[in-house]
Image (tube, rainbow, N blue to C red; front, side):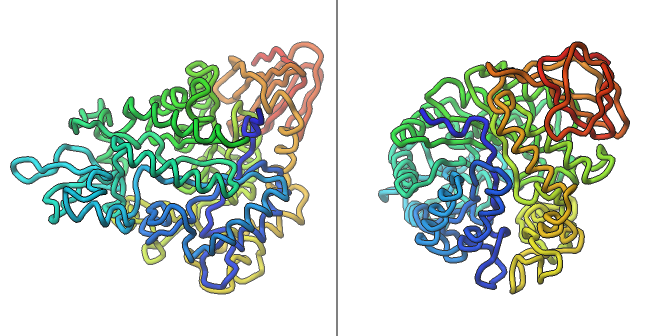
Length: 537
C-alpha cells in the first residue's frame, strides 16, 4: 500500500494569485505550471490547488457551476493535464479542491431545481416550507452573515445556503446527489489527480427534521458576522449520516492506486479536534483531516499540546493534517506577530515547530517567504464578508494577494497587467529572488527544515510524547523504530535555559546552544536533540 500522504508536506496554491501567464491580472494553470520548480525545490511532496472549476466567482471559485471543467480564467482541461504531467515529472503529487457541500446558483442542477417542486432535480437541494408567518423554517444562520435561508418565489419555499445566497446547499439525503458527486470525483481521478481536499467536509448533511439549533453557552460578538457563533450548530452540520458518505468516498479512492482525501472540518474549539479524530478513525473514512484549531489567534504551549494530544488520543489509528496559514485566515507571522522577536525569527520558529508535528503538514503559498498579511482599503476588496461588514471584518483578501517573485519587476513578477489584488511594498520586501540570494533567508530555512524532516524517520512517522516544561517552551519527543528526536521550541521573546540529561547532541538546522548539559534557546529559538532526552527547566 502506497501511503505517500503520511507525513507529507503539502503546498497550497491559490491559483488566482500564484502566477499570471496572460496579462489579465489573474493567475492561471500555465502560470502555476511555469512555477512548479519553486515548489519542488522547496522539498514539498504535493500541491493542493484551490478551485479552478467553472464558476461565476462570487466566492472566488468556491461556488462551482460545472464540476468537470476548468474556468476559462484559469485555462483549459488540456492546461490542467499539462500541469499534472509536469508536477508528476517533478515528483509532486496533485490534490484538488472538491466543493461539494454546495454549488453555485448558476449550476444547471440548481437552475432546474428552483423551477418547480416536481422536476427531476427538485430534491437535489435543501428546500423547506416557510413558517406560518412566512419566516424561515428555523434559526440556522449563514457563516457569511444573516439567515441561512433564501426565499424562492417559483417554488414558494426557502432553500438552504450555509454560505453566500448564491451558494445553495446540495441535499445529500438524496441518493442521486451522492451518486452524482462521486462520479464527478471519479472524473478527476481518471484524469490523474492524486487526491482531494474536501471543503467543509462536515457540512454535507443537515438534520432532516430541520430542528433549530440551541444557543451557544456563551456568545461571541468579536466580529460583526459572529451571529454564527451565538449558536451550537447541533442540527445544521456534522450529522451522523456524514460517516456513511465518507465511507463511500473512501471506497472510491481505494479503487485507485495511491490516492488520498483530506477533509476541512469547519468547526470551532475543541469540538473540531474531536470531529477530525472521528472522521479519520479506522481505514474506511478520510485518510486525514484538518481544522481551524491552529489557524486562529491562540499561540501557547498549552494550546498546541491540547490540540495535538486531543487528536492523537481520540483517534490513535487516525491521521491529522496541521497548518498555520491558508487562504481563509490572516497569515500567521502577522497573526502571531506579538510573540516574535522579529518577523524572520517567528517565521523560522513556526516552520521548525509545524514541521516537527506528528501528521501531514500544509504550507500556504508565500509562507515559506515569511510573507505578511496585506493591509487592504475598502476599494481594493473582493471578499464578500468584508464588503458586507467592513470595517469590523477585514476579510480574506489580505492573505490572498499575489505571490511575489521578483522585487524589482512589475507587480513582483506576478503579472504584466493589473493584478486582481494589489502587490504592495511590504510584500515586495519578501520576494523570492531576494531570498534566494540571501543564505540566511526564511526561504532557505524552510528548505533546510523540510529536508531535515524528510530525512528523519522520527519526524516523518514517529510517535509523539509531550514533555512537561514551562509555559514558554513547547517540548516533545518523536520516536520511531530507527530512533528518537527530542524537539524543543521557545515560544517567547526571552531566552530560555534548560537542563538536558544524558549524552546527546544538537542536530538539524537548530537555533540553540548546548554547553554540556545546559541548553540555551534564544528568543524564538528551537532545537532538535538526538534521542529521547530528559529535559528539565
